[in-house]
Length: 357
Image (cartoon, rainbow, N blue to C red):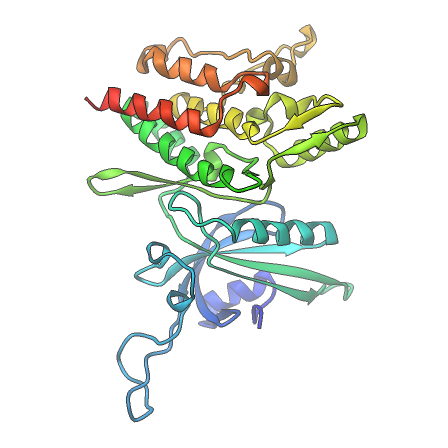
C-alpha cells in the first residue's frame, strides 16, 4: 500500500486536521515533529498508532484490544513494541536515484539486525510522488522505529557539561559496554557489517528507574559490508571519497582518510570510532576536536594519522588512567594492530568488575 500521504505539508495537516497516515497496513496519527534528520528534507515525527478495536462475536466493534497493528507483525521483539502505541516515524525526501538506492540499502541492512542495543526498523514504505513545481517524479521513504525521548548520548553529555557535571566512571563503562554489544552483533555476521557512523549523535540513551542507562546504537545509513579489498589507486580514492561523504571527520579512522592502493579494510574502522566515542563520553567531544594550526601544516588528517590525542588537563583527574589507556589502545593508527570488538568487550567487562566494587 505504501504511505497514503505525501509531503511535509500533508504531515502537518494531519496534526491540525486530525487525519491519519498509513504506512503499509498500519495506521498512525502524527503527534508532533521531533526534529530534522540526515539530508535536507528528512524529518522525524512522533506518531501514535491507531488500532481498530477488536470485533465482538456478533461482528460489531468491541471494547477489547485491537486485532491488528504493529504488535501483530511477526519477527518484532516484544520489547520494541510501545505499550501506549507511540513510535518515531522518519520521513525521507528522495530526489535522486543514488539517494533512493542508499535508502534501500539502509533498509536492507538494518532489517537484518535484531539486538537490544541496535535500533530496530519496525516497518517501512517507499512511495513515488510527483514534484509540485515541475511534475517530476521523486520518492519519499517512511521508516518506523521505537521512540526514545531522552535524546542521544551527545544531547545528554552536552546537558551535563552545561551543568558542570560528568558521568561517573561506572556509568561510562556500562553505557560503553552496551554500545559494544550492539556493534558485536553487526561484526558477527558472515561477512561482518560495519556501522561506519559510531559517534555520540548516533547513540540513543534511555533513563531507567533504578537500572543502568539503556544505550541503543542507531542510524544505519552508512552501514554496509565491513571488509573491502583495495588493489588500486582508483579503488583507494573511491573509498576515501565515500568516507568523506558518509563518515564524520572527527570519528573517522586514519585508513579512511588516506587509504593505501593495496589494503584490506575491515570492521576495525568501527573500533577507532568507538575509542573516539568513549573519549567523548568522558570529555564531551572527540579527541581530535580541537583547534588546529593550519598555517603550521597541522590538519585534522595529520593529527588523526599520528593519533595525536589531546587530553584535557582541567578534567584529567575525573577518570582513572586505565580508561585513558583503554582509549589509546583503540586509537591505534595502524588498523592491523587495532583490537577487535571481542577484545574490547573482554577488557571493558574487567573494568566494570574493577570499578563496581
